[in-house]
Amino acid sequence: MTTTQERDPYFVLAVAHAVDVLRAFGTPKEILRLKDIVQRTGHSKNTVFRLLYTLERTGLVEKVGAREYRCTFFPQKTRKYKIGYAAQGSDYLFSQQVTLGLRQAAERAGNIELLVLDNRYNPKIALKNADIFIREHCDLVIEFQTNENIAPILSAKYQEAKIPVIAVEIPHPGAVFFGANNYLAGLMGGRALGRWVNEHWNGEADAIVLLELPRAGPVPRSRLTGIHAGILEEAPQLESCPVTYLDGDGCFEPSYRAVKKHLRTARGARTIISGINDASVLGALRAFEECGRREECVAAGQNAAPEGREELRRNSRFIASVAYFPERYGGWLLKLADDILNHRPTPPAVFVRHQLLTAKNVDQYYPADQLVAR
Image (cartoon, rainbow, N blue to C red; front, side, top):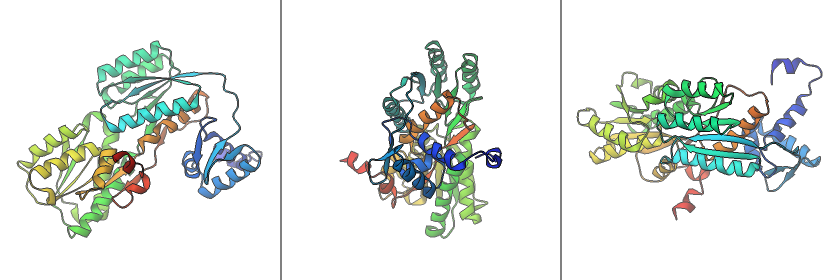
């Protein structure tokens, strides 16, 4: 809440908070848990619970489960929006989950026509897709592409066409950013590694290897900065431990090849491994295993993608991954799109909430994984 609103004698804060709760529901059919509404509004659990209780008593919200709610008050939406979504690629599980979640959220909304195109990790294709969105007169575009160099070109195209943009994970000039709090997510993963080294290697390590994605630019790279900072926060004695950055392109195979080549000349027994995402870290782990050096490394990932969660459940040197919950992106993105299209105040950046996953708590956050594996 702004300072101006807090000083305004006619502004009723409780009513504003109640409106926030009602706006958390994206569609008339959407059912949200208490914790979902807490995440979307940013208010405390106790405040949201009391507001929901009051709104339920007044008939604006109905309880449909132990802690699940549906909004019963929705103004009639007369306009249907066309939203373009440029997917990062179809061969990466993180991107697949974002796309699926967005399709499902659009279907629930009822007033959104979603036009999905695949950028295929290719900047030329991303530029062609932008031209298609403009030609199709999209009301808003959600852009998910990982090449920093073409971000200004895409932004210029959309600005000229007067189409607002939400940029997923990679900032684009003039667009509202949605995605990871990169430094914080890295810090969480780095701290887990530092604690593990203290507990299992008596606080000693010989090398740190970080898998990067240079073409994505400086913002995702701050994830690696956070990882290193987190390691040193828990294990400051590793200040002089050499750090090697390898370009794994955010994918399993390139990371595997880069690390295998690195190991031909690398010295030192105990190596801390992390990187831009789970796929790159798992590729690095495979290289260590094939070189017979499994016990000489420890690793933590980013994204908590399905393959990373599966690895956590094994007796593995992969000890943790920071969750981004891409399966929830769809609802969050369409809520943000609705605010932009209806000219509500929107922040320049909206960050997802992260959670450190380990073998001990992965089933708590992803219990359905076991059902899919059967």
